[in-house]
Image (cartoon, rainbow, N blue to C red; front, side, top):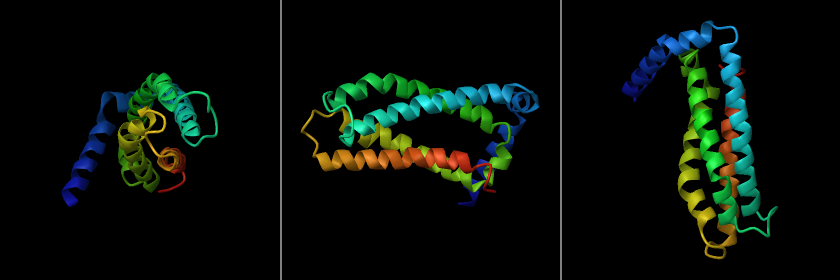
Length: 164
């Protein structure tokens, strides 16, 4: 496990020393500018996640098949996720070594990895299946797990400034 820590810490040092890490860190307006895109993408991603999971839970959009709703919002989900990952990496590069030891950041990254894996595998398979092919309890379980994982990303991100 020590070699993983060495590699991660070396990666963090590299990020800190990149031209974009320095550029964003040393600029008065660039960090807030990148953060605006990060937060806008977070809002769009959160909206698409909530829409699909509300349908899986049977709370909204009962007249529209889950698969159609999921397909309609999928481009927005992918686009906002891409913007969040790129902008998040740029923000991370400004203080990567500091983030290395931050438990809030580690929780966020773990939640993000699990949320992405879950979204692109189990959740996606359930949302694209024909109505009635997946037992309703599994739809609800998938929705709750999805919401918990994505909430973990948000809570972890919010806690970064408060947890060392």
